[in-house]
Length: 81
Image (cartoon, rainbow, N blue to C red; front, side, top):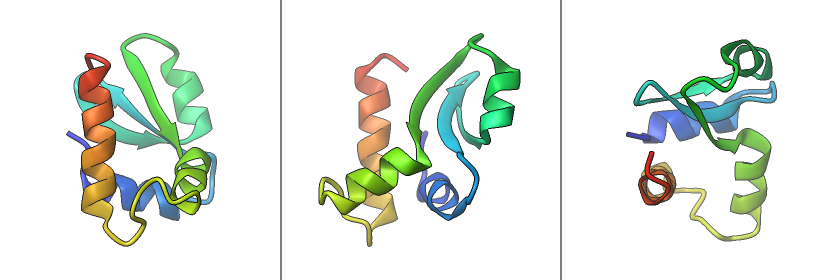
């Protein structure tokens, strides 16, 4: 499950972090960690840059991290993650 903490961490990280689903758990990984994890069992959800762009475009409420997390969680569920 994606939480507001995941969203906050993704937005606060300065590296090119990405929110992923790995072994049934959501986690934020740096580009290096993601490359090391390879493609095995890792579902890429959204990068920090992509999320900032989406928030700037007004597609999500940036002030409500819980709502952003719920939206991302719904997207993952729809994709079968």
